[in-house]
Image (cartoon, rainbow, N blue to C red; front, top):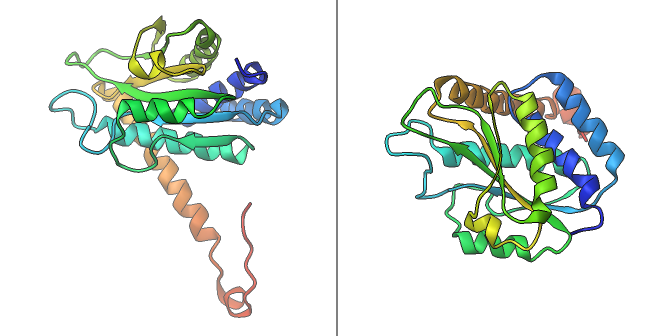
Length: 226
């Protein structure tokens, strides 16, 4: 287990909460926690599915692959801004085989692996957040992540469970898989989509505000956000 793993697991958990629909108090807590950790451990973020693999179940309206990538990219941005080294198994709508995802994770020794997924079922009323792990070394990370995510999101708590999913079973570093709610649940799907739209709107606003106007554009003076 990496030496600074214990110092990192809570910042990652809090940052995951920040990326799910939740109150601003969790964002404040996430920032404070990450600032105090001082950890440079690598975080490998795995956005589930991609490319021809939409994820979910047949007939599902919202493609799971789009939502997992959205959460993964936002998590990357926040972690990177907080000084962490972040590796993405995919950063666009492409299909990445499971062995390749595992190989990427295993190429980093002092790292943790966070796999992002959303649930789906034919029963529209099913909902909640659940977190999976496989190895004993991954249980503390899974517990910390789940405690923060389930406690901050407006969804039921489905618990922490041990499962032998390929990406958990084959990784050599602490690894968790987070099911961030049910996209077949109208309420949870709407929440996930509203969070995605809010993030895109904020990103456009930030980009627009960084463009030079008037005399600034003519003089070549640009105020850049950091």
